[in-house]
Amino acid sequence: MSQPNPPQDSAGAEPRLAPRPLDRPPVDPAEAGVFGRPHGVDGAFDKLYTPGTRGGDKIAAAPPAPESLAEAFGRPPGAEDVRLQRPAGDNGRHPGGDPEPPLWSRMTDPWRDPGSAAVLSRPALDPDDSDDDDADRPRSAQLSLPELLFGRRVKPVALGLLGVICLLIGAVGGLIGWWLGGAGDSLTGSATISEAEAGKERAPGSIADIAQRVAPAVISIEVKSGQSGSVGSGVMIDPQGYAITNNHVISLATSDPQAKITAVFTDGTRTEARVVGTDPKTDLAVIKVAVSNPTVLQIGDPGNLEPGDSVIAVGSPLGLENTVTSGIVSALHRPVTAAGENGEPPVTYDAIQTDAPINRGNSGGALVDSTGALVGINSSIRTDGGEDGSGGSIGIGFAIPADDAVKIARTLISSGQVKHADIGVNAASVAAETSEGAQVLNIADGGPAARAGIAEGDVITKLGDRLVRNAAELTVAVRQHEIGETVPVQLVRQGRTLMVDVTLGSD
Figure 1 (tube, rainbow, N blue to C red):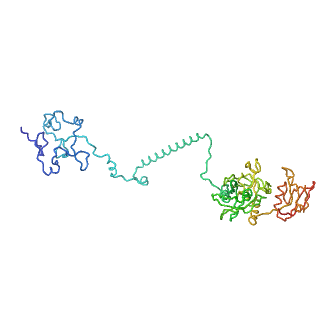
Figure 2: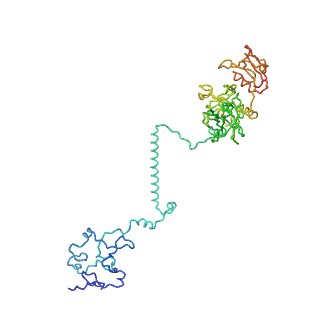
Figure 3: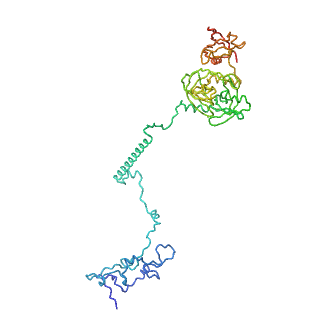
């Protein structure tokens, strides 16, 4: 049966797509070469191509349409017409007789083939390549702060809203901080905590400032002989390496030639030292430290001190190096006497009394005034446990005045020994814990007292300008004068007061 000719439109244009089966119009060879199927391909797409394949991979045929898509969009079962569904019997025409516009034509949409199969495939864009695509995508220019505020590139309303948001965030943060601060106070109770200064200032003349300047000139002295040893302190007084200390600190070295003396400085430097000379009667000694250009202390004037003046003690109590304590001058011209070391004569000196804590090991250390000048050499303390200091400090310490100590030290450095003025008597206090004077017990034959007519039993109450309250003060008063000097002595004999002149001798 022959097919009717395809209908023509009134304008004589190319015929519309006729119902199947129809003869297809001839194809231009040039168009076929450009848009035609490759050789050996029958369907709408290359059967050798599979979505997702790359490069030279072998191309496989497209899979069949999923059952769900075939059921939803496929032809009814048993239908043989390959065209899109049209109402039956109308032959593709509208009720008015005009032909229906074609759903697809080669001229209007050459890339769409209604006869191709619908399949589920992978996305057109690879998710793994999305980052690269974003990187290649051009970005808009970023605005600087001046451009944001003054460049008129952002609406003023937006800027105002941004400022309001910032203020709100700051206010919320402040409220949270205020609440946390109140919660912290509740954790510590209702106590008011004082504020600490941002930085600690050590004003000139403060204890910290003085200690920092004085400490390098105060050394720790270690004396060792086999299993025996002792620890004390010393003060550098001369750039040649001479240091003052107490005789009882280095007495082991004077009695044992094998003993070794070591001086330890504040920076930890350890160096050997040797004994230059000693004065057991005033508990002073000089050692020579093997050091060059050491820091030395400036010598002060103890005569300018008054009770109540501030003083600082620096030394190594109980072996604790570089210890600093502070106090005041409790009294001046306090006669102190103690037993000698290893059978040596008793120790007597005119002391500065201080309440600055001093303990064993402070002996030989420095007592400085509020300017940092040396005013005394720490020597002994009074304790409840005895005069040896075994009971610890109770706030009664004694230091040898610096002028007396330096004078004796210079003599020891120059000659190795020192002599003191002597009156030629043995005396004792009139009574314990009294200040009635020093009673003469015996007189040296041919001595200064004997030549002046002083007799046994006389009570000496004054020597020169100084009152004599006990035996120790008599010794101190005599040593304040030079050998060969004539001094007036006031004494009481059988209830009568007498004055005699005594020319002092040497001990």
